[in-house]
Length: 529
Image (tube, rainbow, N blue to C red; front, side, top):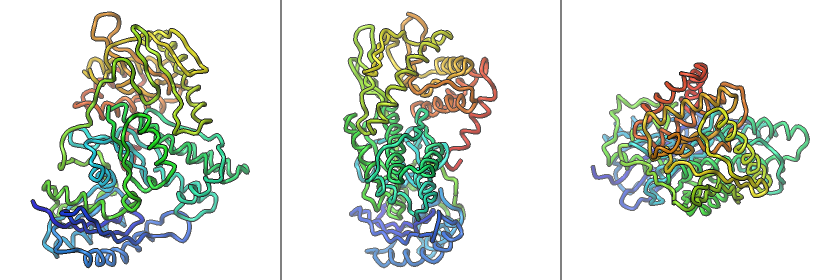
């Protein structure tokens, strides 16, 4: 249908917001009244009370600013705090009924991403969402946004807020950490990346302990930013490498942080990729993104009957059928002479491959040097160890630890990403079971880190790139290894469910059933499962 003007209402947590989107000009009018707790973090009941009084006022202001009649009402259906969402949903249904216009239910997280995609003009970007309650990397494939990586515990903004509450700072904590970091120096804190997933609980505990031990709050704040934002930047780069894309969109309120944007700009520049970050008022929670996506969904006919429009506090982005666009995150094979992976530059020379872990200039030099050295050592050790177990890996020809460079035998002529089939995927499941049985993990078993031989010279399926691997006897770590592999299938395959089932079936032939039980548990820990 022809769309002219959409009213959007947002109220998932902090921001009571209403906006009017004028399709003919793509202009937005946004009115927001944010909840501010007197102390500590968000109190759901207080936030809901704020919504109850603020939503009618911001809606009235937005309607007064509208330059004509409203053609639809869009609202944030979830994810978010149930008490807040119910107030927003009731207001939207009431208005849609009173105005006799369609009702559109919008996923809050997809709205964060779509406003950037629409305004950037990008075709099919990778999306990094860094907000209070969330942190994830998504790519579009087969009519849905697929989660390529995400936090396995808390959202990035909430993680930072936990530290600032510990030191006695009021909400919001992010801007205070950003200011304090300007006078800080780097101190060592944990850095946890598992494939394209990440965890903030360890770094938060270490930051609190450092502060309690007398480390200046400025230094802890500086190191928090350096490590957390480097983790987000690294997984975004891994997603670009996995999918072969060269466009990145930033979404979420934490995206307002200058240091995070600097890191992402540096990373994308090094990769000859492009970054788009919306202006601050469209990064933080706002109704403008709800109204804009609502207009797009309305045009696609994606509306809700009022009687069938319940809120969904646990509304994950990968649950949403994307009716307003088609296609996938496309993949492309690397150049034959050299290509830039997420972890290193890889040079091909005849039957040899040189892997060079060049400095990542977006990371603090101390952190970068530590990670490059540790990962080079681990890759050499675990590549050899896996090979000794009968798992096909490339032979190591030479190692230069000072230059963090490894020379390998060249194996295969394509990645598993570009040659997916159930038998090859099942073989990876068997290989993972074997190395887990020996007490270590691959760390990053994505479809880019499996090489395929299409001739008859040796085993067809070969594991590479053990740089994120480590020794462990924890079933959680083994399950995370499988989780990373299956997420990479979800982001690149047309039939990921079938392929994942093949990997798991082969894994159980020699692996521990408890690992698959833990895998199901891990899958339920993703945000809003």
